[in-house]
Structures are given as structure tokens and as C-alpha cells.
Amino acid sequence: MHRSSYAVWWREGNGQRNVGKVELARLHALLSGNGSRRLAVPLDDITGVEYRHGELRIDRRAATPLWIGSLDAPGALLELTNWLAASGHRKFISSAAS
Image (tube, rainbow, N blue to C red):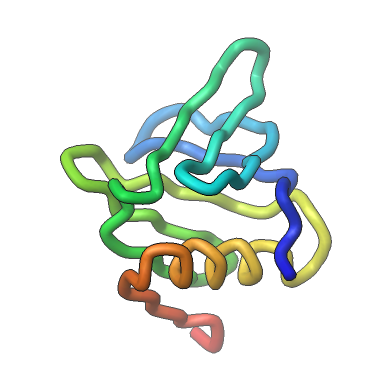
């Protein structure tokens, strides 16, 4: 069973890095932190997830890629990656060994 929130950093494309948490819900993932900074990502808009070098890349329909890194316990980011991939039966690429 997955947890409902994780401590993370995130950025959209090459934008500013934000620090906070991601909360998982039935229809979306909500990133919040850095004061009032919030980003809701509808699960239906996620077209692919990729875990590589300790970072998660989320490809989104009609939006720049979203990058997420863990500030949580070891394995938390891979758990989040697996949950996102399974929630929409979308493509999941893992390059954890690279």
C-alpha cells in the first residue's frame, strides 16, 4: 500500500526548484510548498513516468515535463513512481541501475 504524501522537490521544465510535498489523491497529485506555490497534476494528463538517477520525470499532455526528487526516506521516490505508473496504466521506464 502506498503512502498518501511524500516530501519532495519539484520543477517544471527548466524552471525554479520548489520544496514541499506531493499528496496523492484518486484523480490528481497535488504539489505544494515554497509558501503558496501549488501545482495540481491530473492523473489523466500524465502520459509517461521515468525514474532515472534518483529523479522522476513526469511527461504531461500539453505541458512541460515535471521533475521530482525525494526529500523523504530511501525508496520513497521509486514507490511514488510505481504508483503513478500503475494508476493510469501508463508507460514506466526505470533506469535505476544507470
